[in-house]
Amino acid sequence: MAAWTSPRTIWPVSWPRPGVLTVLDTNVLISVLLFRGTMVGVHRAILEGRLLPLVTAPVVEEYLRVLAYPKFKLSKRELRYLLEEEIQPWFHRISENVPTDTWIPEDPSDDHFVNAARVRPGTHLISGDAHILQARERLPVSVLTARELLDRL
Image 1: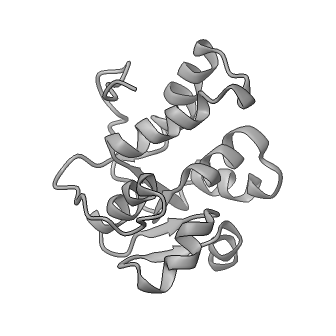
Image 2: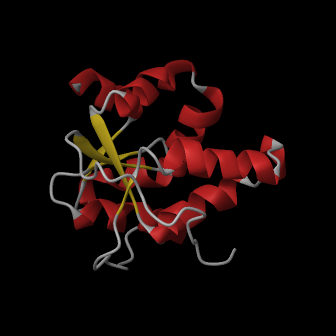
Image 3: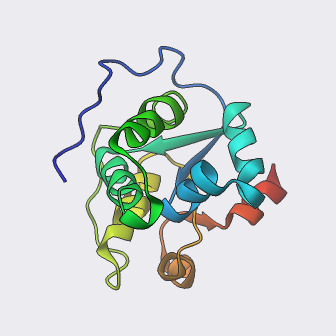
C-alpha cells in the first residue's frame, strides 16, 4: 500500500486533548469500528474524550491494509469514510521521531504499534493480538486488553 497521505490537509485543531493516551492495535480498532459488541465502551470512551488514541503513518497504513481484506467487504467509499470520519477526527497523529525497533519478530507489523506507544510516555498499547499479549512482560510499554482498559476508566 502506498504511503498514507491524509485526504484532509489538517487534523482537528483541538489536539492534543486530555484523555488516557492509547495506541489501538488493528484487532481492537476493527472490533471498535465494525463489530462494536464489547468494544462499545472503548468507542464511547474515545468519543467522550476519556481516551486519546495515537497513530503514526505506519499504524494507519496497517489499519487500512487490514480493513481492505476481502472478508470485511468494505468498498473504497466505506474505507474512506472510516478514515475520514472515524479515525482522523478522534485519533492524534504523531509524526516526530517514531522508533523503528523490532519487538515482535513473529509478526513485524506489530512493531508499529509498540513503537507508536513508545513516543509518548504513559501511553498504553491496547491489544487483543496473541503475539503482543504473549510478549507484554518484555515490551517497553504498558499493554492492556480492551477489558483491562475499560476496568481502569
